[in-house]
Length: 514
Image 1 (cartoon, rainbow, N blue to C red):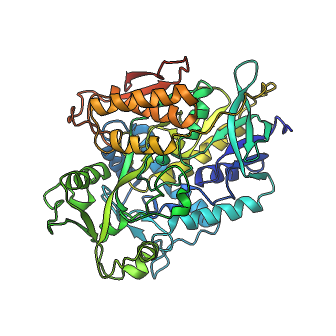
Image 2: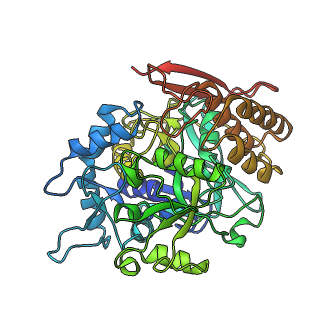
């Protein structure tokens, strides 16, 4: 089966994929999603909200300044300004689709405060239910859109190029092993992040960097893979065992950063408020808070978040429900927390229109490296980035006259890794919050052996992250090297291309920021 070459294929059903498909209307779009639409997207787990300079005391340039400060020298100023400027329009678009954002008594949008923001600018819905509410709104709109065909239960197994090397479609595969070739004038990857490569994660377990592997195997450049953001306050409780039937621990529920914005405080088991002397205290950038908690745990302490704040039940119903599902009552006792892999700042290197380095391919959302997040994403900029780039990608594709050739035949399906649990434990232990050369070298050797043995995407993406982390001999943002604790004088991006020559790791080169 092959779709029309006028068709556009969008892979992924989170906010990035749904917003791109809707923005492309009335052009014909096939939306390829592995699970029922909206069911396994990380968007639905996003508790914080969407950052937008809407307050009377705020401006987009102030939002951009905060973004650049959090990005630790690797955020690109033009990108930060452009995305911040697009934020109010993105909120208006969501309101127009019927998104029920929380409002003040006078009808204006209620704005929250999160770490490293100088103003209250977090637009939210149902308190801490923003991601789920936005996802439900976009899902309804996509199902009602006549130009969008949804293929549920299918995964993109391979990007297919034509004879000229332009991406001209995908090979989609279902759980029964069937393969469909979908021809397309453009392919947009919106496959999310890679937290599922780590044992301790707040992400859906399907988030294992599959889009990175698809793009890299097609020859696309990846950028800054070493920058993984660890959310400081994942709840240190047992996850849902059904979500982790295989491959290691279940995802960890999140105690949203907005709790700290409203006065929640961190303490160790000795009752010390260990963030009190740190600039920004509990609202310091996420990498700072995550390392502080990690250091306490490494010293044998347990860490709790005291969220006994006013009206927690009405302001944060999602957190309260998650806590109670695990036998905790945050209104009466502090919540045990620890850092967990949360967001990937790196990704497929794209330009201002979301174009990858391979013609015919675009990327949107967490799978992309746009230059917005740099070394450390500012809170609540992730949904915003996806919404902004969805519009720009759709405009770019709509304005293109490309007529791709016939996609080549797909290759045989790649195996799933039997070593998933081992890989997740290894990434946690040696490519986590704090890294050093000896651990990274040992991890790279083991991951290389696994990749040589089974050739699966999981091991290759984990290896590429590890290699990039090994070669960045400095500490910057989400990447911290205990053996190189200071940042280098000059901020450099890293680039990764896959070279699948047997026994050779992905080649990685660092280049200076222009």
